[in-house]
Length: 132
Length: 130
Image 1 (cartoon, rainbow over the protein chains, first blue to last red):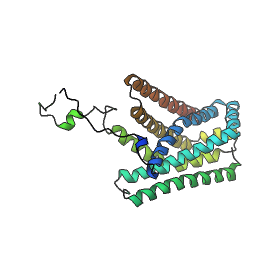
Image 2 (image 1 turned 120 degrees about the vertical axis):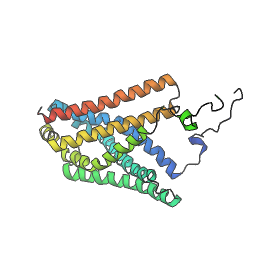
Image 3 (image 1 turned 135 degrees about the vertical axis):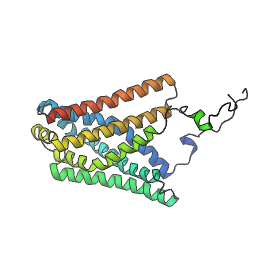
Image 4 (image 1 turned 90 degrees about the vertical axis):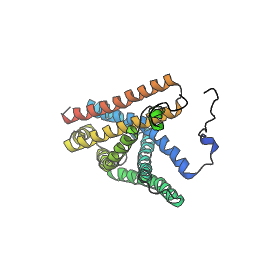
């Protein structure tokens, strides 16, 4: 009872060599945090729509500004990246894709798909409505 | 304490002693809400794209239509639940002071419930005609 047992500790990030899957794991968590606070924008937008034309015009003025557009563009990427990166976790949860080449392919796929889908959505957005 | 004095298994003795004090419920619900959002994301993006460039009257009309309101309410419930679990995991990972952790977890619950309910309230108001 008196002797303190030396238990193995889990080393933190700085101990490890940076690998792709590890970096994308951090990005997954970071985009999750960004999306968490980004929901404030979504809630603001919906509340403004329910409040009336004046409030809605304020949201449109913000999303139409340079900073607003950057934030919404970043939000689009964070959402779509978190989505496709999350689909990787479905594979791993089900027990597939653990071989070195498979997990690298899944991770590169998520990175590329996240960026491609973001660009695609914004091309459609500009084609449909000429930006916000 | 040092040796098992009862019929309890090693798993039974450590259960509930982790930083979250509970089992796999949140793990499962995080996957459940993730699958729900994966299914809902395409209609949600289409809805957002439909609203681009419209004035308030046009946007309010679209947001108030029944199928669109239902899709958005489902997506908001799934995302609020998902982000509540995600942020709680982050808090439990990095906040080691028990009081701060409790405050953080509580604030996280308040934030997610407030965002979800105010968004849902706005959609319901639009659905019933402002």
